[in-house]
Amino acid sequence: MIKITFCLTRLPHLTREAFQAYWRETHAPLVAERAAVLKIRRYVQSHSLPDEAFAALAASRGGPPAYDGVAELWWDSLDDIVRGDPEAMKAGLELLEDERRFIDLATSPIFLVEEREIVSR
Image (tube, rainbow, N blue to C red; front, side, top):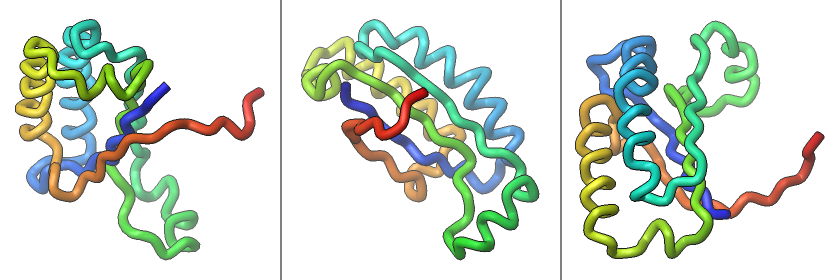
């Protein structure tokens, strides 16, 4: 399976709580409605906890600020993602239009991965 991982940073005018509420309550249903036409097999939202919940861990690593969340979407193949189906392209553009309402796209990396499971219990 192929997965898109999208590390999300909210737009500056939104609080983390407002960003996560919009993402969960407004954007997630839009993705679910378009999942079949986009051939999405799985969609998971990981919402970051308040900064104080992991401040010591973050400080010990000296890394950049935390993302507001991570979206993961799975497909059976790369062909399912890049195919030129007009209906899928329209659905993808509709999702992108909504993403511009709450995600700072310029600071939110997105990348394709192929998972390599190391531990599974």
